[in-house]
Length: 454
Ligand code: AMP
Ligand code: ZN
Image 1 (cartoon, rainbow, N blue to C red):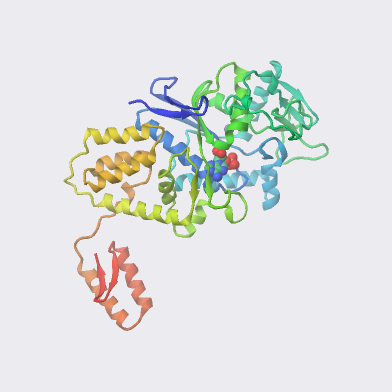
Image 2: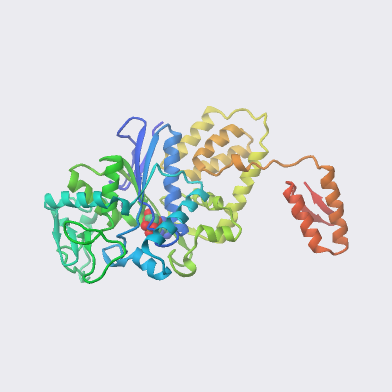
């Protein structure tokens, strides 16, 4: 069965056709490791994980490359301001190298908590300086670069189709808006290499044919994707904010250097927002996965929450919505744990409908609703549900909650003890016994007749 994906390049749903039979080369832009990832960032990585799982479910072998941006991403995406890493270093008092290591570890923990399959290759920008310099040299030879006082820049006027991904050609700069060019020739030109400030030693800097400095933000993805996946490769992903600048510039560099398309399909996820504000890396609006865990949420409840929406729709995060996702997830574990063993294997049609949902531009919301429908009709066997969970990644198998139907003698004793404790108003003991019973897998209710367990 074919998979259709919405390709930002061309803005339409297309049938996915791999370059090599049964194989997919996938590149996804990774985090900038100057701070914790917030749950908005993590939406991107969950979306890419779902894409990978859908491809694998369809029998594709995936080679997934993700970069770690540990140098070169400036405070403003348009090459202005200081390096985010150096800024993070000042904020924390640790070196830029130390914070890169620290936040990379924390990012890896987030991936594992969200049951995101690790990339085949996770590569750091600072480990690929040579490749980036070589790529800039290639662009220089072909006449695509010029030098300003602060760096080497890509001349976007040399490319007839610059901006095709974002359709920039049709978006004239609004009259009256002043564009700060600095030393640049055109507003969209971007840095390939930045010089270290004179008389100042940066924490991260390297020698290059043009002088001591560091790579621009975009060049790392062009250099590493061609190294590990070749060109063109199949699918490139990232958040929607990458379309007008970062991905547009990756395309410009890679295609100018190698005279071939960079990638065939470009997929972008929409943003996760808060009700009244943007998710940001400062203040109250900075919600991390570990802060959700501290509040008692299962990280997979956040995954469940995301599965309920299409990746190309904006989503508003709220704790009420997360509460209901957590309830939904727990209910799923419990329903799954109590599927009658005699349930017949799901019909071919059921499996096809599920596949239709996920292969239709990753419609996880539709697939999840369909699974619930079948569970309610008692027409989904556990084996098939677990197969479907290879796409959802909700760890159903590890969390099956079988209801205890038979109440053990030990439990009966604890119930009697708890009733006495409550009569004596010994609430501490009563709570302790409730926890004990729950730990044994019982649901505990307080009724007029005393403690009831089921
Ligand atoms: P960064 O670590 O800033 O490079 O961002 C990592 C990824 O998160 C990128 O693909 C961004 O496009 C994406 N992203 C940033 N903010 C959000 C958000 N609020 N919702 C969804 N994705 C986001
Ligand atoms: Zn990138």
